[in-house]
Length: 596
Figure 1: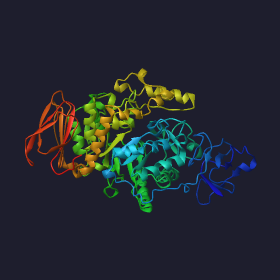
Figure 2: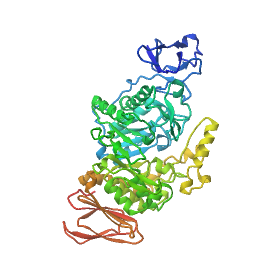
Figure 3: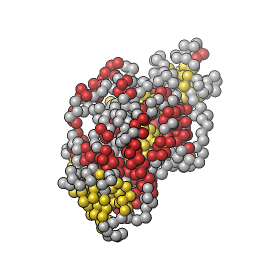
Figure 4: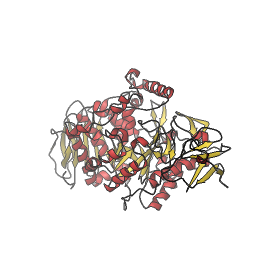
């Protein structure tokens, strides 16, 4: 016995087609649904013969069959039937798992389809020992909700409750999460609540999920504050709980929350934080919410008591842009606001570079400063899927800078007062690009996406002709990681460098201190060197044209990226001279920290 339910306030009649499409198996396969008393717009029907594994669709009025907006499984993709799943049937073995402590975490972002040659949840499970050896705390999965086709980034998902069929579906995701927990790794899943994809999106045919009152880059905005919006909000809140409760995930990364338009007295993000906080209490484990935002607004992560939304952290693009511009010399597009060593120093001391400061790129003041915001409310990185994949040809940092500068970048990320994040393959300077790829079945949509992609990069000076066709399967295939590189140089040395930095971070209490007011920096714009002091630790980096001789507190060199690093003179409590070759970094400790 299964009770089918659907919110479709726009429909005059609703039916569920069970075991076939539109009743093709006979009249018995098409069951009338009745309005639910006291719940406006909801329909339901009980079907005795339906259970786990049963396929079904909904039929509204005399329209075509539709998949369930809350479908837990789409075995044939976004245009196929939905399938019932017993969410309680999976044999979980993660008893006692307590979740992750974000303030001490190191995150690893991965795309399931390109992380391994097979591109599945199960294949990713086979690489988890690599991540454990590296020392990361949690994997952050790019969106895995059902999207059009077999390959894509996932940000055009439409069946938000269904793990992507080509990755391995519901059971595949559960096996991956379970395996992660048994190895001490958390799992954060990327979710998209600011829009839905254009292909296979049936929500608008069911109810007022969208509104023309606001415009977004993707068209009509999600209806979060207009008539009938209570059920729309419930859809997204229930979806968040689905990933955390049913799939045992440890947190959500919320895509582009600046594009979530909600003028309600209580913003959806605050509602979400309250819901997840309550769920964490019910489940007895920590759950986290991490936002991506273009606003540099501390209110996202400020406590609700202090007038904020109460999210746990947000991505810090300012830190990325500052670090990337210094290490690559790029100053086009939004990098025009960066390029100074001072910007890196400002990010390390204050969190955001633009915190009420004038932005020449935006031609206005941008951001807001909050002296009380701790560093663990910000996620810092040298690479992520956006900053690599949204380049014209998807070049990684390894294609843009020397090995020495890659090591400098890694050291500044992994010793920063933020929650560090690595992007798949970054730890060994993967040679494969990460490009934008799609698999839309609609030819006109595919053409529009390909043409639109080529028009995005004018402000960076990139040639449209250089942009790979997202629909070409070769674009997807060349974006897959080449795991054979791990054993070769310079990849093996870079992998060892990242692992050593993570070990040092975990072994050194002052590197786990996320209080920004305790970070001290010195720099020279002409010499292009930077010194960062964090309690008992000094991080010194030189990306100038000549060797740098810097005065630092006496101690010992715990890690250095080049053999030519020397620390001369000085006793504990005094000063010493540190010699840094070009494109190198050294980490000096001034108290008892274990040798690595």
